[in-house]
Length: 321
Image (cartoon, rainbow, N blue to C red):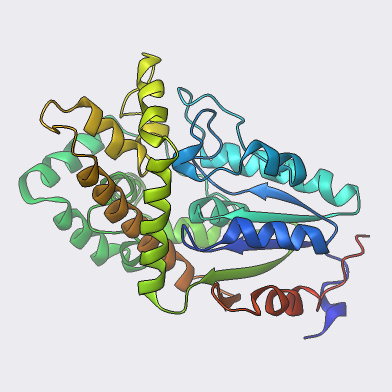
């Protein structure tokens, strides 16, 4: 790999991977070795008070390894992809100006996509069109919407799960309103960012090990007081399951558990639901990553992980011009 090719572009490291794959720990190790600052790419860690369920680094760790874009929004106020892109670009600009390297770490792949590929100018939501789509889904199921989307926009349909109602609805809505697919809109988006992205993805070599790590994390969440954290959030009286913060994996399952009068305190059933939902999230994240271009993959359980990642990173000059 020829270093001079990227001499005029500051380097940005993107550390990606499914949930529970060890991204935060690796980011801290890289922080010890490189002149970098960490930017969180997590759509839930942006919210204050959502700590245990998001595996947010403890306060002591954050003092030693500051993370930008953590705890910047109250959970009552949704944080959009566009807002993340704006905030992250500003942080990156400031970090580079200081002669340091932006190290973007997280599993919110839509955030990474918006940052590295831009955001297309899409039409605003249309209640009439959404109502039509919802009626079809109500009668035939969201799998029918997924099938219809596959006929006009196969690339987007491959990326979306057949039960991802929110994104399926938006993709069909855009096509109905404009006659253009989401894929076409994104292809027209020109990325003029003055950065060279080093895309690094980590995950266990075998899926069963990731499942084990997810199960362990969920168990630790509840042992650390996760259910009490959700109780406190519900007690605020200003939150509900329509908000993105409360729809996130783990919080939604715990909220529904506390809301139900039939759970009989069977916490083990709730833990299992959280494990299943988290595995589904990890599968979705891996699907996104497999379609990503120019990604260097590493086994997160390898004893040489740090050295292997550093071998890729060290191919580039980190002296920002």
